[in-house]
Length: 167
Image (cartoon, rainbow, N blue to C red; front, side, top):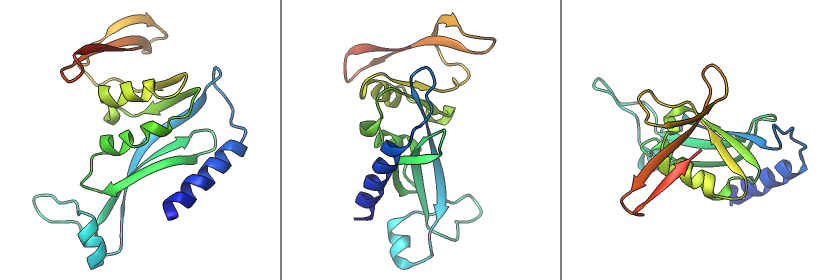
């Protein structure tokens, strides 16, 4: 119920806003956050706690990944689960709602060719941008500036038995 209200209001607010464009594209960002919940039995059974060698966190924690329109900071969509869930898995839940005519900025922690390929294939004219991790294998298509390059990333998926290219 609350999720439905969030999605409906986010959709209405987003549709009614006149967001600026960059090269004809709306700008979005995907990022994650971890937040604490009250220390109750219900929350403890639903959400994990982070831990290190010395101790466990005092509160159950939730991991949330958001899709945000960058000029207004309007959260268009989100996915959340226990802190034990990986950000990549949560981001993959947002793929089906990637807006058309968009450029989405990711930080390098979201480097997953499966996620990025699915993101690009969803909708019409959808693009993504992220800094590459050191050691990433790529083919440089052209230089766009001192440290900016248009590259092609190629991966072979055993499950799909084909090669996918990212530009």
